Each structure stands twice: as structure tokens, then as C-alpha cells.
Amino acid sequence: MLILGSFPGAASLAAGRYYAHPQNRFWPILQAIWSATARPLSLFSYEERSEWLLARGLGVWDVYASCERTGSLDSAIRKPTLNDFASLAAQCPRLAAVAHNGAQSFRHADEVAAALEPADTKPPRSIAFHRLPSTSPANASQAFEIKLAAWRAVFAAHGLVESPEDTP
Image: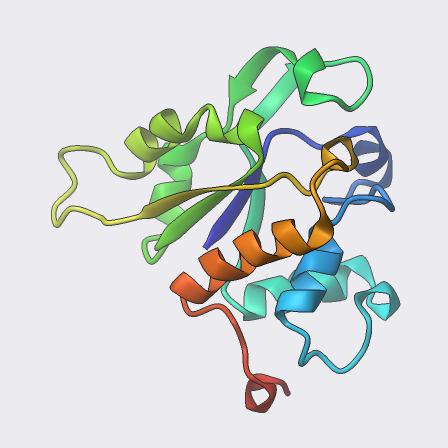
């Protein structure tokens, strides 16, 4: 599964890491979904977190390759350029699902689907697309438990919820 955000916020761009803002709920949600992990994610290096995601079949990217924006709010995004999803499709032939982290990313679900699942693909791919509640601090009005339940349901639908015996 691929999680698609819109574009990294200022804290993430400054750190050179996805979901670097300390109030973003991305990492805490994944820690809760994969609670069998022996230690808190805060003790992992970013490289270890990235390997942890990939080992569980999860990739992270953004809908936009570039954009103009002052601050971190998606509503401030101007002149966005979409990432090259056609190239991604060739590199990830086993991609089974795309989950959009928030409304801004999901606005481009049809374009992403068209690039990942061209009509002339033989055999046709069958990628599931989901809209998840944003983990951004700007979406603080929605309770963590509600976000977690939605994320957990999508992960479970794609076999990405681990049991304790799956943990190394």
C-alpha cells in the first residue's frame, strides 16, 4: 500500500523527512496499528522508521512533486505539479492500494488512478483507493481515536495489521 500526502509541511521540509511535525499524528497512528512493535517509534531513527514501514508493505509519497506555498496549510498550495505516477506504476507492479492522507491528496485520486491503472494495461491492475482522515495538526478537530479507527480499517482490509507473532 502507498500512503499519499499532499506535500510536506515546513517542519518536514526543514528536516528532510516525512511527517516531521511533532503534532502530526502519522507516526502515532502507525505505532498504534502496529502496536506489537517492541519499542516506541520515538526511539527509532528516521531511517529505521522508513525500513519499518517498507518491511510491512507500506510506502509513503506525495501527490505533488512541487508547488508554491507559504506555510504548511494545504489551502495555501498554489501551482502544484503532480508526481510521476506512471513511472511509479512500472516500479511497483505489486501495488495493491493507495490511501490518500487527507482531502487535498484525495482531490487527485482520479488522476493518480489513471496513471497507475492505464486503460490499456494487460492484464488490468486492480488497485484500491481510499480517503483517510488527515494526520496533519491542521486536522486537530478530529479525535485521534476516530482517525485511528479509519486508518486501522483500511490497513486491515489490505492485510497490513500485524499480530504479536509477526514482530521480529
